[in-house]
Amino acid sequence: MCTNFMLTFPGATPEGRLRVSARTLELSGHLPSRLYLVPRNQPFPLRSPFKPWLKNPLQWTNRYGFVGIGSPAAMHVLPAFMDGMNEVGLSAAALWLPGTRYPTEDAHPQLAYSDLAGWILGTCATVAEVLARLQEVSIWGPPVGTKDLYLPLHFIASDPSGESVVIELVDGERKVYGPDWNDHATSDGVLTNAPTYDWHRSNLANYANLTVVGPETSIVSVGPPVGNGLCGMPGDPMSASRFVRAALMRKGFEMLPPSGEGWIPAPLGKGDAGAVQTAVNVAMQLAVVVMATPYGTVLTRKPGTAGPAVG
Image (tube, rainbow, N blue to C red; front, top):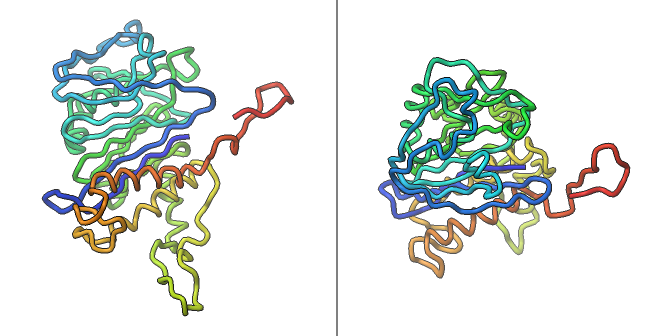
């Protein structure tokens, strides 16, 4: 279960905003991961596990250095970065999308799906550049069920301006949702798992009546309690519910003024915590709330058995 979202805070930027792109990654069992520092001028791909299938493999050299998260157990077989950020502030993440079916025919140079996040981080500075460069490549992946090579993934990239792009491979076709799609629907940086991104955006309209703005606390008030504007927000751990929670609960941060007035703790050096520390702390807190799956609360059973449930 994966969730990605973007938060906007007061900060020392030309427009007075500081943005944090955050994501969670939860899968059954233990998923070892390691932080990798990938320098400029690093040749890619790191390995060629798809060489027997790729007719015209893409090769490139990093323009930007980046920090990425990957699995050390898989790097020697299927090098892939699940998440990362480059030196100019562009972030990219791969999230689970069951049912993904990758294209296998295209005249453009072929980019293995496992290299997509690394390619974005190493060669692009903005979402606009990602959109432009995507026109120059095809994204290739093996058929569903191919042993050890097939992983169903979709991708999101976000830049410091607040723009995002979502990339999905559905029914053998590439679907790209950029800043100009559906009235800037990607500007919140929210992405979870199945169904596809367009379904989640349509489903979000079912909760248009919810709001993070509510009545103030008062020792004399007998009106509705604080937080009643979110009454009815879904609380289960399903992908659709996590998408709604992330999209709704991040809205309040953009309503507060860039000056930082009204923030607790105060950012921009006006309080005990600095702007960046405040932003990171809040993003981590919201990630916990959005995921809402403490260990032991979502269990499965081993296939073909009636034995004890496992986490």
